[in-house]
Image 1 (cartoon, protein in one colour):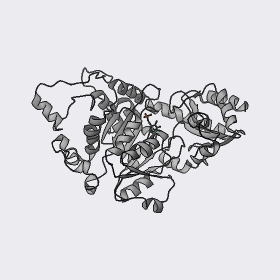
Image 2 (cartoon, helix red, strand yellow; image 1 turned 135 degrees about the horizontal axis):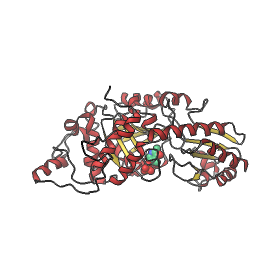
Image 3 (cartoon, protein in one colour; image 1 turned 180 degrees about the vertical axis):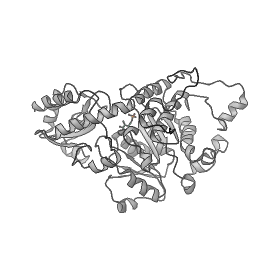
Image 4 (cartoon, protein in one colour; image 1 turned 90 degrees about the vertical axis):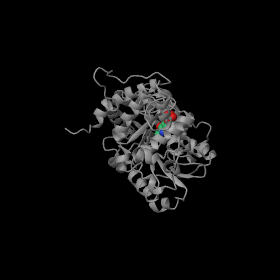
Length: 428
Ligand SMILES: *Cc1c(COP(=O)(O)O)cnc(C)c1O
């Protein structure tokens, strides 16, 4: 029997193996602080010479059990939890890019991440170039500069549902000596493992499918351990030259390529910014992970059933779901998401903004929420909610049509979702 377990088994049992007489479920270490017998030993912890816990702002055993499970699921070498998906994406870039550096990111990324990059991190002196996911290699090549430090995209873009050609972006990023960072929130490691396709760093908003029950905000970063920081020594001095705040430790030397990125992010960014996940919430995230493989299957079945129904409905103009034959993302979906993508789809009703509002008003099973990727079906009409200040022309300019609806299939009965949509469409 091979030691390497399959995804379903890792979802349930990964990251924590109790010894004789120990708790079956992961214990919640509800403690800010850890006690040591001697100052000498504690000194070693502070110099990163010994491993151990001293303060929960940096690390906590409960968090580390859950991070270890996510690490195993994604096929990485090291991982950490963060307080939110926003913190995870911020750390993933800020760990290797400083003031004066440059990053290439997709235009299709989640609005919160776009804002973080384009407004807040720009203020910190990091420049971003946004590119369409269907950019050619020739066009992409031209955008790399000597100070480019990373390429960033989402496996399945939220909310446009565009599937990213991970292998292509990994190849081009590596040609220019920079890592590819992939936000794998919508696909989850159950449906896609970006590291297997060449990605170097994977991030998550665990708030979505991984929690899945709408109970805890969280994030995670997983390092694939394959990017050779030493080969581009001048480009990543934070990883390859001494860190004075830890008695001159060189992360790549002390922790190897597999451990350098996460150790630096923990030792510096977590220490200074403190966006730590609380151990209680890490426990909730683990409960979500235990059923992730079962839920994702149902999310995908419901997603496909609802997408097929909408595609054939006379009042629906178009549907975006990569599981649908003929969808723009169908071929990439077959390659990267052979077992299904997720439960989120987008569709446009025929008619005006008002018609979409009528549909929304009449839905009874699907709830109106800004949230997505939850056990309960939820939906959003950006033109009357998140983007309501914009007129039709402004909406179209940012890729959102006035009748676009984002619909996130939960794990209820598919026919109930279809019946609900059917009666609401009849009201238009
Ligand atoms: C929600 C989301 C985020 C942000 O995560 P939070 O946990 O809300 O901070 C980042 N990326 C994607 C793809 C998301 O859907």
